[in-house]
Image (tube, rainbow, N blue to C red; front, side, top):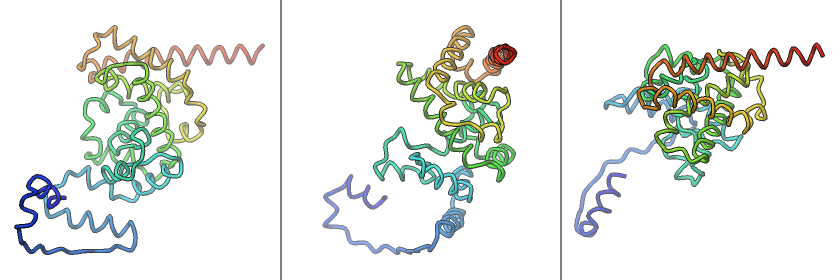
Length: 252
C-alpha cells in the first residue's frame, strides 16, 4: 500500500527509481494461524489493544456466523468494502461492541460517550465476548442495531442526532422485546427476527427522541446518565402496562 501510494502521488518516479525491497511472504494454512501471525508480528510496534482483540477466536466465529445471514463482520477493516459488499450489510467491530454494551450491560450512555475504549478494558471485554454468549445473540444485536440506525436515517434525522440516539434506541428495542430492563444472552437468544419489528423500532425512536428533547437535546445529554435513567423509567411503565394488559386478556 505504501509503495502504491508513493508512486500514485509521484508517477514521474515510476520509471526512474530503482530500489531493493526485502519481502517476507507467509502463507498460513488456517485463519487461526493467520491471526496468531498478525498478533505476533504486530507486537513489535505500538498497535491499539482493540485492534489485536479481533484476532481472538470469538471474533472469527462471529464473522463466520453473521456471513451465513448476509451480514459481514468487518474484523479486518475495509475487507468487505473492498469485496463490494453494501455498507448497510457491513458491521464494524466497534459498532457491534457498542450494541453489546448498550444492551447486555445496559449502558448506552457509555457506548455513546466512550466507543473507542470498549474493546480495551479487560473487564468489559470479558463480559461482552463471553464464551457462553450464543452466536445468535451477536447476530440479533447486530441486526437490530443496524435496523435501528437505518430507521433513524430514513426518518431524516441529522447525523449528530442519529449518533446521539441510536444506542439508546437499540437498548429500548431489546428491553421491550424481552420485557425486562436487563436483557440477557438467554432472553435475546429466545427472540425471533419478527420481534424486532418496524413498529417497535418506531415506538422506541419516538420515546427516546421525546426524552432527549426534554432534557435539552445536546451531546452532553447523550453522554450523561440522566437520559438513561429517564428512559429506564419510561420503559418500566410500558413493560408494566403491557404485562397488565396481557393479564387482563388471559383473565378475560
